[in-house]
Image (cartoon, rainbow, N blue to C red):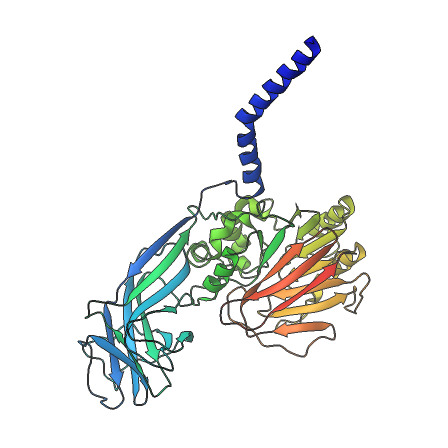
Length: 473
């Protein structure tokens, strides 16, 4: 009887303890498995702007200004082009969404037109005519199908270069049955709605330790220039993909200065700095010793001033190599790599550096990396990622001499598609499996135990993709 009472008492005490602590333990477990913050939380803000100017021009009346009208027209015959200008402010992070909302005042059964960015922001709505209109020099951002009178339509302009200050758009149509929209002079002014994500001190809420399932490695090389919008487009891809971000060199063009890191890389890929494990490129070294690169990334770039390091990701070993410094067999880096490979034998290994040992593009195959490649091949490394050539190229598994070797060879991805202008290909190598030089984007690798999946993800508007699965040696 006493034994039964004792067991009953223990059960009751245990139940009470679970009721008190169980939910907290469960919450802690779920949080650590998904989204426990390990730094400042990214902030998302929505900004709304109405035009500071809007008008349209008419081919049939080339000297007439329509800047005071309640509507603006978009038509193909006669040609009628609409122009809108906004004065943006408060954009201190990554633009993750930008939508232009317009009220249809005269329907079109065929098309609501297309919208493009215009670099000229000096025009005036009261002085613009068909003869004096600015050049429409940007790519098509968005196109609508049939629209109805009274409908509020949305043009996606996320791909535009949206920064603080004036930004200008033009709307065109090739259809003869045009469309009319309410202008800023009407009670239903156009509205540009922009969503901006800021990460405090360059931190994002997505973390490499958080995604469920096998770890993800995502990134590219040759990334940010203040003269182009490419890094903003690829950064939007990174923002939607949980995991560790890799870089394959050349972060801030043209010279890797502290200012270029702050103003070009920082507002784009810099939002993911805390989950980035970088590799340096030659443009990073254009500033002596790549000092801004090391200062910007801090401990995430490995030991200060060295440029090469390693880390584990799931069951994989990741080796980051500095191809800008000595890599011959007598170099400290070679000795470190040899020791690293010998001391950490794992089934799956991946190496990242800037200058490709094998490439079919502008810079071609870099013979200076031959000793590193031979060492990696001897230790059965599985995958190599490079940048430097601004293309995407996937090469077959290769041996130390660049011959196909399906059993022990290393598969190469050249991913210089992070945002800077793309290069042309030369004569393709015999082992070149897939090539593209028209599309910016990022490479996503899902690292399984004993295998991996790859996927090239293009920026919006890009049609090229590549995906597949490989096994470790």
